[in-house]
Length: 163
Image (cartoon, rainbow, N blue to C red; front, top):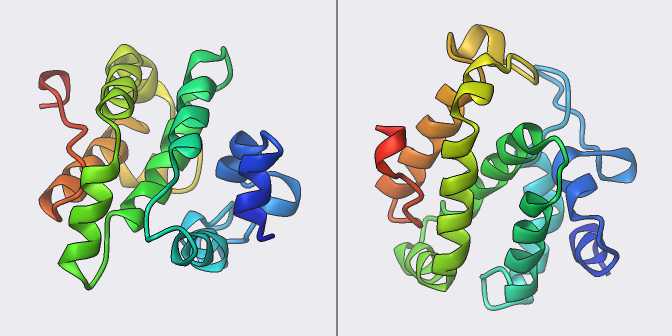
């Protein structure tokens, strides 16, 4: 079983997304956890065994994490880092399939979580690159990535509060 499947099975998805302990993949260029490296190493293999889409239990676990009073800002920033890779493919059919298989309740949940934390995300300067990449904290990079996902044909998480 690969580490992504294990994280889902053992309710360690939060640790996986944040790159804690055994889920940590170093970003040699900027430091910190590297979601793209983790995606390439673990999630691509998982997707190849699951018809190229996340299973419903993944999305449910994402919603459960968002319902908990954890550090949602870091979770959202990390999750979007994985979703940017998920909704990218050389094959437009894969992107379409992934977008169509993303549950509406999950799109709404993530959009609401981001909008509810707008001020907090704007003021949050933590994590790799936020201080030099965005004058408005985590908010800018998260919104830019969500726009890129939608432009590529992935799920559309953009709502009026993000425009």
